[in-house]
Image 1 (spheres, rainbow, N blue to C red):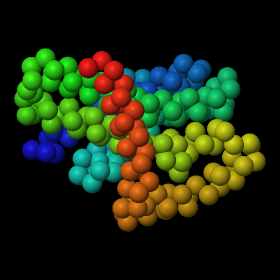
Image 2: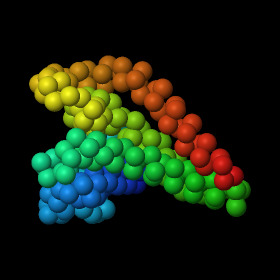
Image 3: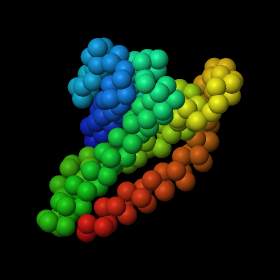
Image 4: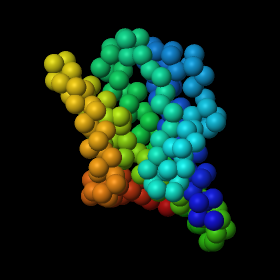
Length: 202
């Protein structure tokens, strides 16, 4: 039953995350994602079956990456930073919306159906998790592209030259649970910020 309560959060989190990348890329002048049919909220377009199973069961998963051609951006570095930021920011917005809906239902009715309660809480927590996880500055995560966007060209090249080792480091962090040490403070502050915003209205 817990798995069923997590699945809506996973579908929403992945679909909106990838849609945000596609939308931002399109706005920055790159129509690759749109022409590939990825400028949509249809989860079937974005979901990688193995990735969604891994996230739902092991808390680590992935969707199909949105195809992007940075050469189409009017400003390559600015485009990559904004497009990369769009996915995690969308996850934080979804988490904010889920908590806001939860607060409205609780304040209005004083009790929430257990199933609805679990689904909303999972949408809230999983999307914060997706947001902070993707901000880690290791390839292939969004955080690496954000960091690279601020680096001078020669350092950017050097950074990406170690990309294959970054994959191994990321897997090592995940499977040794060391990732929790990194994500813990990020998750805490993201949750505090979202809770603070919602608290302004209640």
